[in-house]
Amino acid sequence: MPLHLPPAPTPALRCVLSALGSPTAVREAPVSALRAHQGPLSPDHPLPIHVWDDVSRTGGVPRTRLAGWRFLVRGGERAVATAEAVLTADGWAFARFCGGPYVAATEQALAQAEALATPYQPRLLSVPELYMLTLWLHHDIASDGSEGPAASGDLLVPLAPAPPGIAAHRPQRIADLLPGSPCASRRPPRSSPNPPEPAPRPRFSVGRHRHRHRHRPSSLVMSMPRGPFGPRGALSRSPRRASPRLPPPTRLGRSAIGSNRPHG
Image (tube, rainbow, N blue to C red):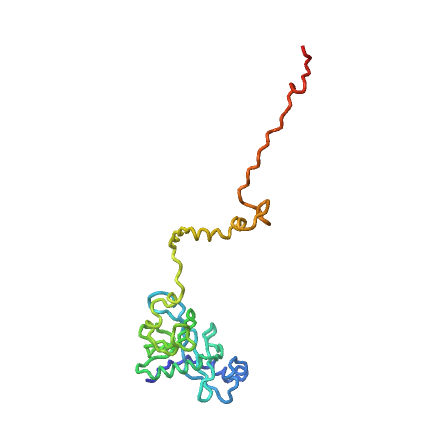
């Protein structure tokens, strides 16, 4: 069923047409396919770009914001780039030309959406926290594209390249693709505020006890060849032998060397 494309704001379309008509802007574009194209260029398939910033918020309806409008730049039969217009304090202004894999992925997702039986309004939904860009098929086809919250029945078509664990170009409902808190489910679990107590240390057996002390210096010393003063090249930790204690020197008293008193 044909898609119901929302009309882009006239100032946004005008500034994109002005950029495409400027040889300098096209020549300085960072898209080789756009610079190399010979012939007229035209904007096609205007898509509002919405950003979902609070994807990690649990529950509730996703809150999105309009970031701009993106046009497929068609050169002949194929899209060679995209052109974006953003809303500034002075009104709509041309932002940039973009290339890369999202150009062909957007075309492929639009073709998939046109083959569905249910009518949808196509939008682009960017999820920065997941590094993912999707084609958002909105249920309200009468909306102007700038507003309208996402409903659980809306479809998301992840554009290639998609983040790990998410299949690209597979239409899924928001509730199935991003259930609950998708960021929390992809992040490593946080540490518990009350970590479990460490397990008791097992007692060592006799064999393990010897293995534990095998590298102690005393064991190395005892296994080394012994010299007359202990192990060669190392200090001995073996108990020293008690050396024989010599008797204290005899102190001669006055009776032995004579007395200064006269004998009476």
